Amino acid sequence: MPDYMYLLESRLSAEQHAAVVRIQELAAAAESNLYLVGGAVRDLTSGMPIRDLDFIVEGNPARIARELEKGGAQLLSENDNLRHIELVLAGEVDASLAASREDIYSQPGNKPDVRFSTIMEDLRRRDFSVNAIAISLNANSRGLLLDPTNGLADLERREIRALSIHSFTNQPVRLLRALRYAARLGFKLDARTSDWLNLAMERGLQETISPEEAGSEFRQAAREEKPLAVLKAWEARNLLDVLHPHLARRHPDYDAINRIPHVRDEMAGAGFRPRLFAPVAHAILGRLKDRERTTALSHMALRPAEIHAIAELESESAKVVKLLAGPKTASPRDAYAFLEKARQDLLAYILAESSNSKAVGKIRNYMFKWKPLRNALPGVAGELEAIGLERGPKFDKVLEDFFQAQLLGKARKPEDHAKVLRKLAGIKEPPKKIEEKKKPEKSKPEKMKKGAQAGDSAASPARGRKK
Image 1 (cartoon, rainbow, N blue to C red):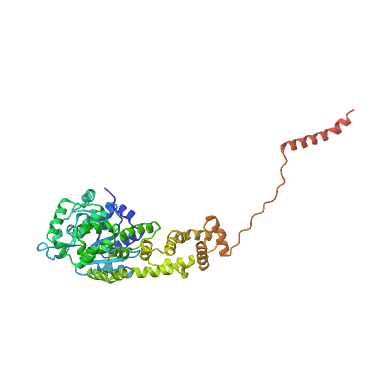
Image 2 (tube, one colour):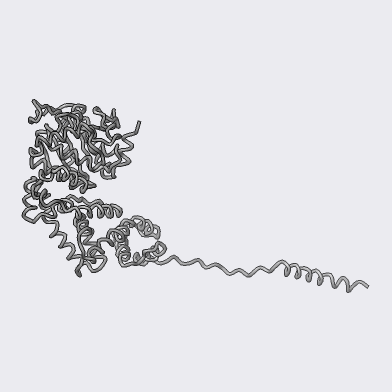
């Protein structure tokens, strides 16, 4: 049996791991049972990157959310009726907190009555079996896998399976979601789910998807690793019209969409993890005229901050390009200082779309040359301590001056570090030890010859006295 906690801890980023630990502490303090559910568990067991952390609390998660806010978490949305909260935690970690619940339908397609319940009932009410898996984060059962609908078997079969014949009737937005999961994971719909989906579309249930639900799926598509595959799956089923008729008529800008994952992978290789919602969303709507794009974004009821980020992406990126191509960032020092504060999603958009070689070149230098030098400064600090400078304001200034020298191409080789650091710190080279010159030893044959001569001279008088 796999050790799911080991798998989880080895696959999480440092920021995600810190978030899990903190929420466990808060849940324990609130005496609430806590579980990691849904996408994180699905992606963990299927080998996909873990993008979001979704937590279920048996109880009200509001107190935990308030404590996280005090620690700097950004609250994105809160649904008091469902006790569902979306946040961005420290380190740009996307997370959600929700109370375990059961949805009770008086008849298929009606609005459900919500009853707060246990984790097992919460898992059984979900859309697809691959999302109905949880890992306990409680002290007495930590690492226990809960899989009441046999979702692990569907992951092994690489299938998306709906949990009810009424799944699409109860929530028609699942039509978009089923195809999105299949495209993301490279899975197929199981036979019954495929039949139910086709039947739902024949009945025109896609036309009943609300703008808010369509906007939520648009948001998720723009955050996917493979947004192009998702959009093509939707278009193949004539579902783009659900997002907006303008998009269905003009089609997504697939070329622009395809450039962004390449940039994302390039930036990830340099240690950057930009949030690419705005660039991808802009590319999806790239063929629409400005007024059509504004209409589509408003129709999908996206958050004001999201609409602003998409609408202003081109103009904000143009400002960055202008500065990078101008005299204010002519020196590596000034360019680095500017790029260190620039939004990473703007840098990604520029790398994908800009033809300005100066701007693109400086961004690449920042990612692949200057930033690695900055990241190596802790090792240089050890060298500075070794030559005798104590930590303090002067120590920090010497390190910064050393980094600025490296930006200009100096002290790039490790063997040059000590000399440059001594010069910047005003520490002289230690005096070299002068070794005394020793007289060269005479060779053995010479010693033996001298010894023989000494013996002869001592014996000569004795021979002379003998008559």
